Image (cartoon, rainbow, N blue to C red; front, side, top):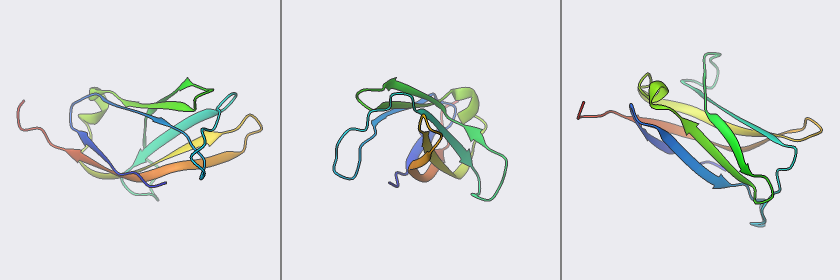
Length: 107
C-alpha cells in the first residue's frame, strides 16, 4: 500500500496504524518484527531509520516515530518503506511512499 507522508522539520513525528490484509482483516503480529528506512533515492545506501514499535500484536497496531533531532536534519523529498519479518524470517513489504519534509517558518 502506498501512503505519502508530510513531516514538519524539527518536530517529533508519530504515526500509528493497523496492519490489515486485502480483506480488511487485522493481521496479528505475534512474533513479528518491523522496520522502516528513509532514503533520498531508492538506490542509495545512506538511510535514516524510523523507530518502529509493535504496540499491540493481537490488534496489529504499529507505531512509527522520528524524533525532532532527526527531522531537523532532513530537507525535501525522501522515499520510505515498511517491512514486517515473520517468526520464520519471511519478509513482507506492507507500505511505501514518499515523505515530504516541510520547512518551518517560526524558529
